[in-house]
Image (tube, rainbow, N blue to C red; front, side):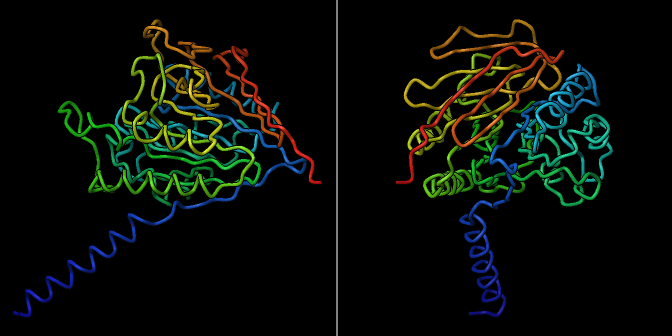
Length: 327
């Protein structure tokens, strides 16, 4: 055996070992403290980054007003953070122009937890994951998939873009897959990690957040890959809410086979009036204008409200959990 071939073999073995370690690694976990009374309040917005245009600034203003009223603890972004093609690098001024300079209200100066959307993958996807952005704006935390543990609730952020098969074959746009090759193994391991984390969770509430809708009557409709691969895991592990963006609307659909509520908050800027498919089973609410969502959690109750661009409450979702005595 030649030295060069031996060296090549060693490199391959080491590389494969590192890949297996990466692919099977548990989801990174972050701790989010609750309020002193054990409650938690936060906002959810998606599909927003347009330098304030298409009413992004107006939505941001109302988020600030509601955020102050509810004394929110953090904000969730459901992806498509920067339009139309993500960021070009972690030094792209678009980050500050569409985030830092838009969400300026005092109540919004809290932690932001963000996932990537398909438009983010059209740029330098890993730029949004860069620690350098946190140096620019300390609120920003974006990873492909991760868990936020607030004791009362565990929130499971899932990178849904790699699930969608059409993105690998379409020719109109180029996607940055550099961080997830090979995609099939990436998705398979992600599903295993999500399932394991959900099974091990003892939180009172379980919320899963992704960019793509599982169920939607908006422009994009249902995401079949998520129905086939992710939904059965959520149904089997007592997930309360699945929150997403992608469709530029506000929406509430109840699952017909489990208590899961599908909640779309993808109306942070540009929306499309009348962009609606045939009404499906379980539909509770649909709005095709700009807006966002608030979530208020206690150990026994959840209250979720959808707001329009003027701050009006359009729809309210409530859910309760039976509290059992300790004796």
